Image (cartoon, rainbow, N blue to C red; front, side):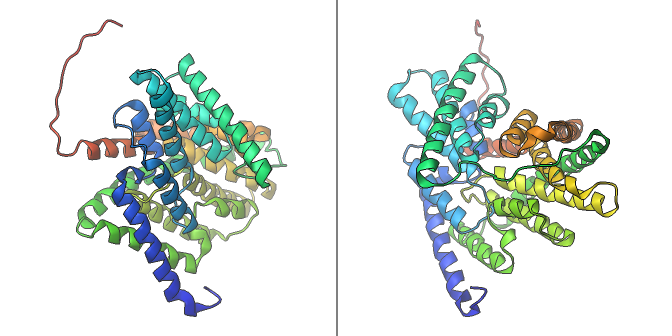
Length: 399
């Protein structure tokens, strides 16, 4: 379309039509709305009921529209949601008639979905401990590890048959950062921690602002506007749309001027918040990695430009930024480290990566702000209980 601007009206009309289809799905099945890792967490913790079984194909189709049209949301969120639903259906059909058992099997499905979408099975297992339940038990470990193992084997076989790679990222890191440059990881960790605080607070304000001002606009029209806006922004620059995966690949290869990165960072972050708060199907994991990659790149370019860091360690700084922002925004330092080892070739630079992750987590811990997923979970609880009367009860149990 860039080469033939005469097709611009056709592109915008097509984006509007796809937006209408997506809005229809979201209207018929409200369970398909949102980022869905927080929704799955809320369901696994028992604070929000599980979705309906008929939502499974609708989530798949709705997230496919989001992905193919370039709305800046990830594919891992719907994968976790579909995994949770598969676990719920399986438990209902074959499992014990026990609520706790249902949640165990649902947890296994969620972990399997995460591991399959990211190509990081160990991170999928840690998802159950750090995010879903925030506790460690043999039962959680068994269900999470077994389901993730079989989903990984299935992915490997399917990818082998189709000639594709199950890995989320295919780059490798040859350089090893020496101890004398470890301070660079500390700087990136501080910056990522501060950025995570800003992102979480801004998300809440964007959500509240849109709730007040966009309420009068019909829901279908809001979704159509987002899809048309995506096509318009994509005409200007491709890195501004999509999950952020290709943007990360370009940053790893060394592309992108610093001033353009700042523009990409601001525009993508705001666009991401708008699309997510309005309920477009999609996740925030890969987009969060893209934000961290841009922060890491900016820090690396600054340190390299003033001559205090050799250019050969720039890729390591990008990886540190990715997992440090993930650690701080979602408060999952162990999962972030596991993901760095599994998917980002972090085993050769574990010490600087662990330093960045720990510092970023310490920054957000000192401030005392909730994780981004917890903020969204609280919104889900508030939305689910809207208009209901609060009933308090005291119960005594022998444990």
